[in-house]
Length: 348
Image (cartoon, rainbow, N blue to C red):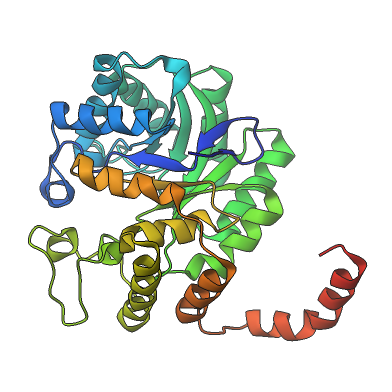
């Protein structure tokens, strides 16, 4: 297990992060993803920690709060030292019946963090993330509320999930202008079958020193090797009940064919190669892995030992490449001469 610097901070997190969306099973949506209870969750958390994972991600909406409860209790049951783990959770979604029990308002954030701390049985959250963009709340209000939490010691760092590049840049500008805690990470969907964030988000993250946490790195199980072009899948597979996130099927299955070829040459699973491809991407800080069983977790953890050659990476990149889109193709055309100058000068 390797550890990477988290955004522009001095914090280091494991390159794999344990996701807890499979914990709890409360609610119609979450029961389709997983319903692990305390004993099974303890096994997964314990195994991840043994493998060197020091990063655990959850959210207040996962299983209607049950995931946070199970995660916190697992840390207690396993007697995990607080300083040995980095705990991340999120706020934004509906957590009560009231009209203000959702979104990124100061009211909801300050209320939600207290409830998350209680469920997790913690005195502070290492990374508190805004789970989605709220068009009804000014970004400045959200940032001021998060800064309050940092100043009071309830939260150490703040991040964001599922925001567009322009929205994050706006937030970074406001935080710098007002001297507020800034977003240090983006949690976003990214796979070899879904490389959309490479158009705008990746350049922004690299420019501003914001870390990237990847959710659903196997595209909801599609890249696990359990699915075929004819639509058949193993019994109990997640996408059979919850077909998410959306993908370009033709490009996805072309990518899976290429992944299988590389997997066969290494003698490993397709899922391991899909995860290894992400771990080879410079912009990625940590990849969030979730599992229902220990053997699934072990298979995912093994991805850290795979080293892909430049030829293998090139082959995977070629088959999964995004089609050119404006203004990207114009930037490539107009910047060619200047990039050549930079390369010749040794600056690139």
